[in-house]
Image (cartoon, rainbow, N blue to C red; front, side, top):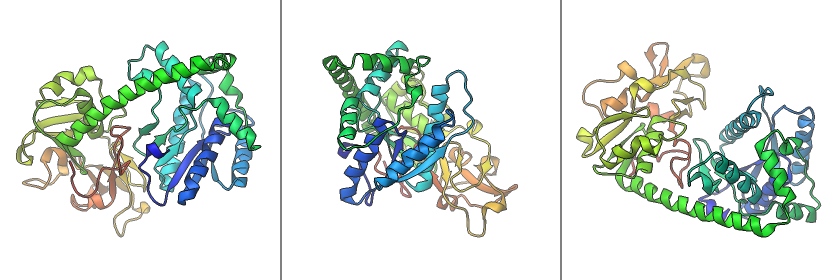
Length: 407
């Protein structure tokens, strides 16, 4: 955990708990790590509603954790009908529920109990899908999304070590039969891994190889992180200025991801020529254009035609995957039926503090057609989002630095 910081003081940290041995060990180990520095741990238990006894098991797990002095909440996921890709749909719904709960609790660190066995299964599955070298590095110990920092501190730990640790403390766990389902690829791989569990040297070698690829991936990421820090000035209003000259393709791809609010960066093949010789262009929901009075280089702004339509202005609402509503203007409650959307054609005209191309895509609050927040005070109510692991590590995750502009 010490290598996955920074962590704030006082620390609040959440752990995803299924009730299985891995997540039970993860939450108890996290508690032991956090308590000496006054940290508080919140266990989040997801009930997918798929199995008849899932609700009872979730309640039992919550009781077991509370007996250990750990605050526990059960999150109910609905609408998961049996059918194709159920495991993937359940995972996406689970992650969304976990991150939403963290946001509601004001927590930015979310621990998962994935271990060396899970890592081996993940890499094998990616091999079967013919993933590139970055994918074959397996799961990362730290991934930053738009809402939380996902931490996996146990990726180098053998699952039997975790089970032995729990047994030594007289702590039980539940076994989810779906984890061993022969109808899912991961279930079949898990059964084979357990059958060969005595061959520890092979698993150790596999883990070492994955760790080596992970270090190579991390070194590459540090290179483009450095390029972004040196070459790009981010503005919390949702645009950036990039200095002239070539930039690593991965750095440009993730810059476009953030400014465009995309779930993933564009592929490197889409940006490699542009990265080698940056020029005005439109790509992946963003525009690059001459920076003008903002200095040499290029402005990187959201493409006006690609912005999301207005959403209801509720506390916590996310618009265009770029901004989250933190509060409402004085005198307006949620009953005022405000909306959050782009300025568009209503953007102030003439010389302005912000570039006109960016102004059109900046957020504004409206009541009907009437604007109720000026271009100056809107950012008293919003928090820009750094989207989906685009930058790591970020000392203020998951937000851009506010209010000053920083390079």
